Image (cartoon, rainbow, N blue to C red):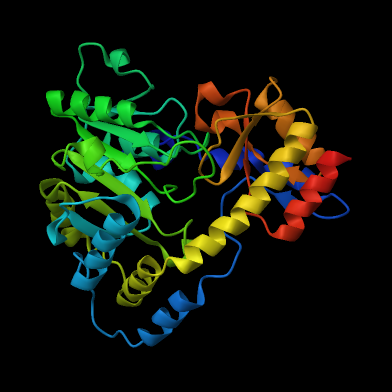
Amino acid sequence: MMSQPVSGRLPDFPWDKLTDHAATARSHPDGVVDLSVGTPVDPTPEVVQQALRDAADSPGYPTTIGLETTRQAAIDWLARRHGVTGLGLDGVLPVIGSKELIGSMALHLGIGPGDLIGYPALAYPTYEVGAALAGAESLATDSLTAFGPRTPRLLWLNSPANPSGRVLPLDHLRKVVEWCRERGTILVSDECYIECAWEGERPLSILDPQVSGGSHDGLLAVHSLSKRSNLAGYRCAFVAGDPALVGELLAVRKNLGLQMPGPQQRAMIAALEDDEHVERQHATYAARRTQLKRALESAGFRIDHSEASLYLWATRDEDCWTTVADLAQQGILVAPGDFYGAAGRQHVRVAFTATDERVAAAVARLSA
């Protein structure tokens, strides 16, 4: 008997539903302003490009665990920028993009049928995909009491959040860490937008001693260089935390040959060691965010949360697809909120990663 095809095991790829609206937006006389996906458009920093060029001669296989210098660069960055202490080389693993890691995490940790995975009520779809791929049950909720008597094997946090830009406060993070440790639940925090903060409280890593109590037991944090360093095309990311959990991931990934290429590791080191390009990019995004936020508010939108990440979580208190269709008529393409769960059905996610010229075009159209 043939196994069930992937199309039956996994949720539909959400962006396929945007095809008709994308065609409408592209038909605008001045071209489309695509704010539906948070893909970087600004140049990869020169210091990173040079590191890649210098490492181009790389004839041998890389190791799955990665270079010691790559892992040390990640440790130093977490300490310097985010106050994380007590992390050793055995607690860091370079990976080939954070989405691949998130989608395979449950499977690689031995979670499967009969197990339960929790993730936020508003969530990046890959958490659900990862649970489905492993054959586990999943529950989208922001309430720990929603699990009732059941204990999830794995719980995902995402702060700053995609799509809403919400930042979880210290007290909440501490509470979740304590709850998971009491139950033996693995807690994984997706922190890919941690350096994309604009207002309010500074985002905290789950590995920050204020949150973790100085122990990384049962905790993992996922970090990506795609957003902070315009490295989406390089697929540079890493996971850090509990050495026992990192070791489990490493053992599986060795058998699968999942190895970050050597040149990318050198580029990753350069990106993690250089703060200057991060500050420049942060200022660029801040300016684009300010312009779009003002234009959306003047056009009758309310912006909820959005204190961090690369998105504005916008609503006119109407069905999200009505908003998508209306903006597509103006040549502006955004992501409907229900891509991220039922809780988002009256919002749209508006990325501010487009070029200055395209952001200006969107502002002009919204103002008109």
